[in-house]
Amino acid sequence: MPERETIDRAREDAAEGKSPSTQAGEFVREEIEHVRHGKHGARSPRQAIAIGLSKARRAGIKLPPPKKSATSESTRRKARQDEAAAARPRRRSRKRSRATSRALKRESRQSASSAALARQARSAASRRSRANRSEAAKKAARTRKRRRAGGARARKSRR
Image 1 (cartoon, rainbow, N blue to C red):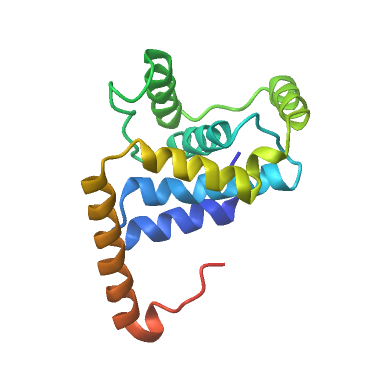
Image 2: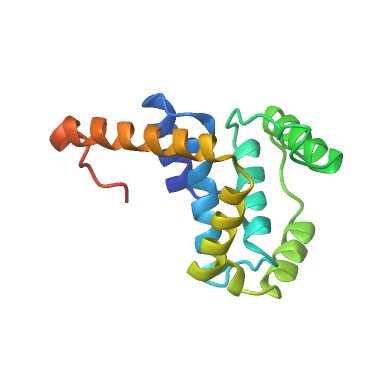
């Protein structure tokens, strides 16, 4: 279950008109923190990210399933399943929830280390074209410029 604070931050992002992937980023950040603090474990940074995205979909973030070329059918099926779960909130099975938590706690904490996340970011970037990376960097620069121009309003702390 995502923390109240994470849901509030995602809602704030939505109110500011940020993209669903940015809103989902809050859930991914929370999951990385959980792995670091030993609340959870993950076998790889990619698994921690996937758990965060799943939580986001279940919390009602309108995040589309991944594109056909990028992933397997089972991943897309899981994304559709998460969207359906958001539509009909149910009470979690206590026994299943505890079993999942215990299994995840036995996994490694290394997957959320800064080195592992940096490796994941580099490998993800290397799968993108040079033009695509360049466009993303330009967009980030524009966003930074707008944020800095916003002044005190934009400097409001995230935490």
